[in-house]
Length: 599
Image 1 (cartoon, rainbow, N blue to C red):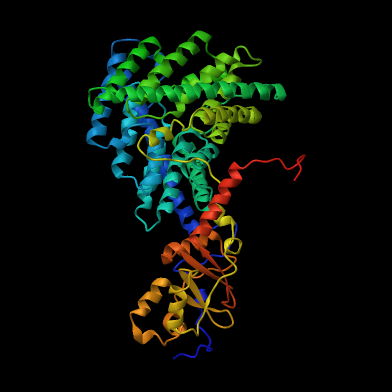
Image 2 (spheres, rainbow, N blue to C red; image 1 turned 90 degrees about the horizontal axis):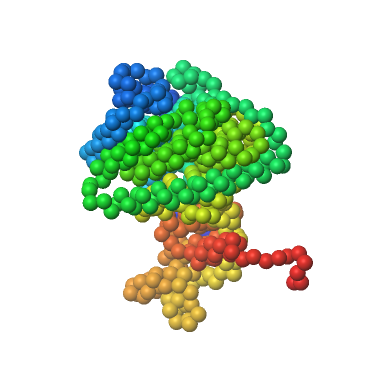
């Protein structure tokens, strides 16, 4: 029999297979440098993908409407009304339906929900087929008159480039997510020249975390993309504008009012979108034909107002520069909203950002006719508020508007408008236009981030300090009686030396097994259970680490020992973790006044 007074092996240094990390503000390690280097490649790929998509859209647009091969931008205002204006979107819808059915169904929709799904449930893995078909289908959709933008497709395409690149290396799902989002961010940066807004979009919509591990590579991808942009697409702001507005308290209040109106507009459009989508679900035809039906409505709308077709960047420029009349703005607002809702509900391919900017800008411009200053200023606020409220990304909307125009003086009114719209939409609707689609596919998403109480709390804060333990020198027969005959016996007991050092743990199941082996009755608990693989925690460990140990060791109880001496100081069970979760919930629900009340 081993001398129980001999020095014990360092059982307390083992942690159930969970690697120990020093506590700190961040968990990022040196692998972020590898991801940063990869982000340079992915950011370059995203920039070139944006260049290819822009030229592909222009190529299809010129071929369809002018019957010529050119990549020059084309305004639909120059296209004459004719029966072809109805036929072209229908033909485009048929092609897209065939591509979706026989190519990949993932090309349907506007891209961002699909990117979110890949991140959350697909291990951040996208297929080469999607990377090829998404930009092609979007170019066909927009080029044949679809009232969409290029940002959704480029987010999907850039994300696919990042995902495919990541799949060549031994990376975790979280690391693949970082490169997927880096590609999406680079693509959006190249399209709009808005690196800050693109990074904020990543944070608010795609990353589902705020960690240096993901933020640094994504920001690097945006920076390398904006560096490539002058060579590929052009330099300077997309819609340069400057508004001489007195930015006082009254302007900020009016900006918030415009934001509230935009929030109501956003809620109405989101509700209508999914009601129309439900109506498509009731049609007695295969979904492959839905884009063609949507194309028919698009074409008929084009006969009413041709400028409502296509991306419509020229409309944004006219709204901001005030080079447009009220009748045209009203017509564009009504027609663009109608054909966009139907076309998007039909499951065709295209982005939502450009339409949101036009719809929010048109309403803001009309409201601005009754407000002081240039209507273009209120159009800008309407654009940002519509984007921030509909996509639930107020910071993205704010920075996006600034980067589009270069007008830094509008920062505070923009913030007031986007936050007001955001407040309206989160109170009116449970989900955004992006997450509602995902929820309808059976996936629940929460967009609220907070500090994990498991990472904020130490083991010492929740452990049971007064632990009933058994001495290591106790014979097995006596331990059996202790566990099976006492009415107040526990299911598990720590076993300790006379000086309190932990030897191991025994359970009632262990005792019953020993009962069947009579030759073990005379042995001590130390002989039977001393094991250097015992998973333990230390008082300064976070509760999150304790939970990891429980999972790795498949145990419901973890002893807590002093880090230096190995002396048992406490015990943590699963129920203690649940109590912590309950306490965190109470801090959200329970309300009370502390000043001016008797206690």
